[in-house]
Image 1 (spheres, one colour):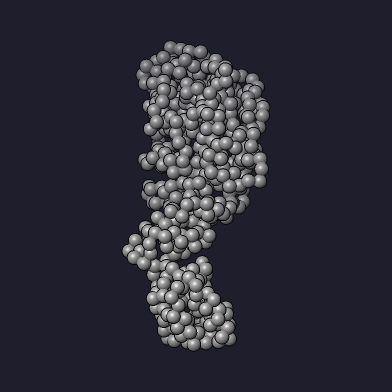
Image 2 (cartoon, rainbow, N blue to C red; image 1 turned 60 degrees about the horizontal axis):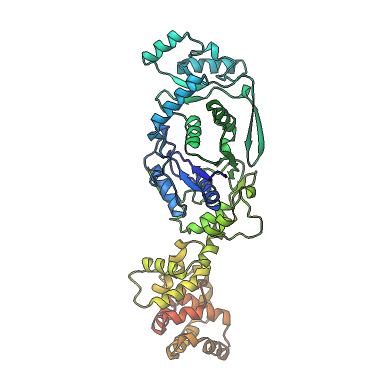
Length: 502
């Protein structure tokens, strides 16, 4: 019988959810849903010193905005909870006692000053200090002390940690599904702390224990955890757990330029968001949502950073990603973050979006100026500006001239058109617009007017557009005129005429 697919996204609430973490969550979710499995969120909050208020909420809000539904988690109770590690302390205490009894862990009473001395002493000799089989019997721990002294220290409440007893001179043979077999000598692995002096487990201990207890089938996490795999493998061995998850370590998301992985600071440097939704702490940092990105485009873009669908197709919705996703499509090498491609995806998804989304934004932006337009006209405006939108935040600048007379004109074009015979041209335009019953049919009459007066077609079009829009860019000019109506068009042509004269 095939074991049910159960994957977990295990963020630490030490700050906002970065898009690197969001991509990890997305790949876990896609794999789970593709295989009719469960997607679990487990909050790894054992490091209370680094805990940041509001972080857990930001993580959950980010997943929700992206459409990543949680099967089990702090707010979606299942039979494997609790789903915050800080609420599982009793369980960890039982498991650490099990390792101590089996002789795979030991108490260490070394003071910080003592360990600092050993590190500095090794540095002077050009060596790196490691707490392991090479020197642990010379240090202050339950392996080097008589049992009576160890018990006395424990009973007196002496500060201590619990360390893993790394096997002596053993080759650890573990497997990553993406990279194959990984071989590491235990000579290079130190005796990691499993339980801290505050009585809380470390990441290494808690995540292994939880993955086993929650019956996690696949651990899909970032490449930065690959060096920890041999230790986690040894912990499974120490507990005698033959069934362990399959491990997949995702490639890094790289900076747009230069070396290294994408960081939160790169967003400030290159001017793009690095969070899904806004982060509020000491200062407010806007996310993709607040920058006018669609969640569908963010999910689509992130999915192709480190994963290949196996064909040339680039546009996917979430359901299509679920159907297509496989671990075989993951890349081993890092994926470079491209801000321009990011915008391209958003532009493409806006084109596919229903016009009602844009109409709703228009109504919010121009709530006091909607008297001239019914729903049908608003839908036409949405259709006209949609091809020009890279983000939803551009709706205001792209649509404002429909609702407000231009309060300024593009200086470059204004000065250029001022040299034309603008008085006669604008007077002719006012006469034409005033005498046309249906502006939707004004184009043939416009062409006749230009030809009759032997005017430069481009300059006439420029003056007409500048009067209505305030610039020489925008949607089809005659559709704009039709939507604005005769009265508004005449007024705006007159306003440009006065501005050019002055």
